[in-house]
Amino acid sequence: MTCARVIDQRCDLCSRSSYVFTTRNDRPIDPRNVNRSFFRITDAAGLHRIRLHDARHGCATLLTAAGGAPRVVMEILGHSQISTMDVYTHVTSDTQREAISHMDRLLRRRVDRE
Image (cartoon, rainbow, N blue to C red; front, side):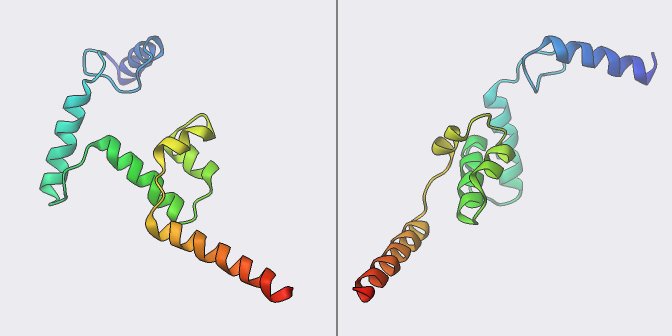
């Protein structure tokens, strides 16, 4: 069997499935297996154990805290709607402090003008 034929067959299988990632038998991957693999990687790297999904939340939060435009962060995460960002991003206390300081500066300017 040629390589092109194998690719054609795989593409045919992919187009029939609604799953992005599957097992060798084109069955959905059990999330527990994904987490086990992720844990092996994080353990080997000496990192604190978190679920892969939690890493996704962290990524969204860090991108937002770094000033990433919400639309860009949405596209990186593969979301189809901007409203999903509310679920994935978490406001850090530094970001809260910065917003409060900014509001304080704006209010002080108004008081100084009067």
